[in-house]
Image 1 (cartoon, rainbow, N blue to C red):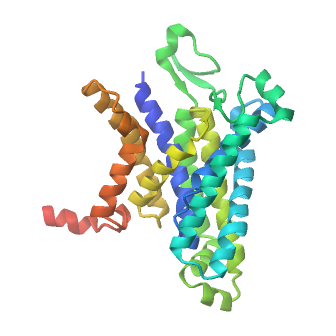
Image 2 (tube, rainbow, N blue to C red):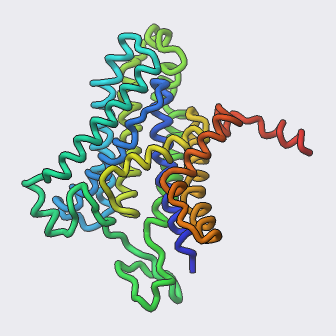
Length: 332
């Protein structure tokens, strides 16, 4: 029997790490921390609910390609309409950061308006499915592993065997994280696009001279980052559901994980995301139980902000930039 707290931590660790990889990809191209990246994830969540309800999909995991496509398109739209014009005008990083923050604020306002008004053509289908549109949507259905004299896959676990039931997302989340990391490695290190992307990032002017379409590389990179956000959003909808304004909490964890990893390393994003998930889920819950307190301040992104501040003070370039061999040799 696996502790439910460990299950939740592993599940969220895989999902958060995928989000951190997506934010890292956008940072690598434009060198701008994208404060609106959590909105991309929410678009992926929304696409998951719409595709599951309106298309009558047999499994919640079939929503993944729809979420990735829609969120990728949303990220490209953000880049083309907002970031690209500002970059061409020579805007500073500060202006680009403010622009991404403006997109986030606008998105949050539009999301709230839609949740209040409702989407009339779809409300009946969502009501019939028992899912309020964009307000407090329950998790999408998941399968379970029932461990009793072997492993069985069931949809609903018997109450008598609840302790031996493991949700499918517990396995799917880390598996997809490993697949995403491997795919990004092959894409960035072993493909022509990866070579073109690295060239466009390091020296855009020289890349243009040798015939690389830098704008196209950036656009594709933002689509990939958006698709990763959609993948994470769909998994989040299966594991935790969706609530209005969830992006305001997610962005804290995403930034903390990405900065902890180094903001420029895919592998660092994975490590940072896992460490933040452990802190936000496992450590804070154990600490709250030990002092018999809910620790409300820390539970709303407090651990993420502590991790972020310590990282900026001790290792501003992230864990991947630390010379661990030298540090270990000094202590030994």
